[in-house]
Image 1 (tube, rainbow, N blue to C red):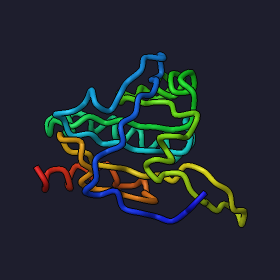
Image 2 (image 1 turned 90 degrees about the horizontal axis):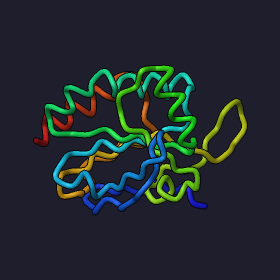
Image 3 (image 1 turned 30 degrees about the vertical axis):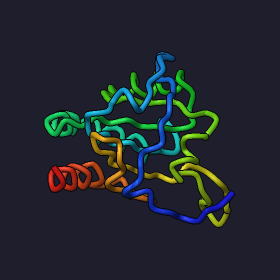
Image 4 (image 1 turned 45 degrees about the horizontal axis):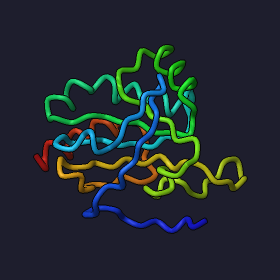
Length: 159
């Protein structure tokens, strides 16, 4: 397992099909023709992941005005996503990738450190995918505070 960071900017986004909080399958290809904010996060109901999901939810109208949809992906199962959405009144699409296959394809699985211990997990990452499904911007090791605003600002600049 490599922790080497590579940029995916300028490449075609990897196709995927994953279940949402109700078990309904969503594929990236169904969003062709729209901008997609695809973000990977470590775990439902943790402080940073909750703030990030709330920030994207609160800015959903601004993203929609830019013809963009928001998709969050974690290893959590659909039932966990359902509880997370309900508890925090989230209004974004959360998809489950329990096998980590998609998380790894996008390079969002890697080495992390916490309290002096090293382990592997989901590295908070965001990808801006254009209507032709090309990745135009990649944010790695995202800091939550101000990130949704940063994505909106960048999207405004490329549209």
